[in-house]
Length: 320
Image 1 (tube, helix red, strand yellow):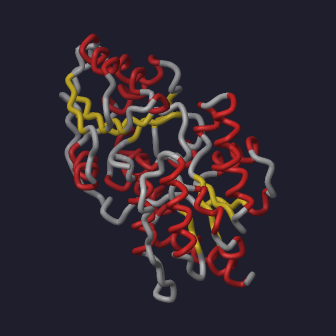
Image 2 (cartoon, one colour):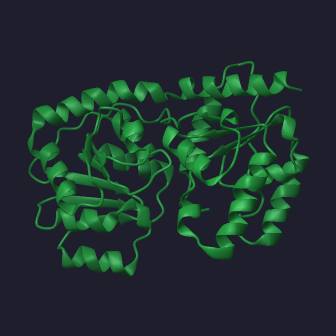
């Protein structure tokens, strides 16, 4: 979908980092995953495009329904939808998006230990068949030195969905002399809150890859205080660029950030504000976060993540 390309960025980096003995063919669904008939068309198309190994990387788990189970790997990024929906809609989606596709895959990967635990709480499945392979930062995210603007820092925030917690961030910034760059479609309520709190902000509703990269390079600080994440890709993208990070102390975010972030309670406005001010005003602390971030992100290099997927592909090939 337009504006939702983070998964595509991750797996483009993984494909580019594959060793020579692995030949990858990227297939994009011919129809947007919305409604019954487009999804049926996507399933039929996937069945025609099968290869030695079939790896479903996006939020189109149902593609597994007509793939060869012996050679299918399914990546599940999170279970957020199971937390959000209720009633028959939740039951239907749980069956067709999780339970049945997982049964139709030989192996399932998740992008964090947090996501693995959550998936096992929702779906009865053999834990041995669920493996953790983290996301990676793309090769374009490299150190980009920039003096920190202590007078009026530019703060980057990514995402406007409810779990991205933008409203509490806006309240936390009220009265502070800073700029806020928001990537994502703003609701009218969010725009009203920005005006009420007198926040100086800019907005890119549907950012291109180049705009996302430039946003990281031009900011002084990344705040990613989500209430829920499957992994938290912007954390490592910020660290790879050399930007200090303020993020949540819950869900998968401590797993992604390691010891290289300022952790806050995402449900507490004062905690978010205190974390931002700590990074803003303590230059030694800020520099230590940046240095630790460069070390942490090595765990998530495209080559390291590609090697983990290659090992799973070899495991599938050996089962034929």
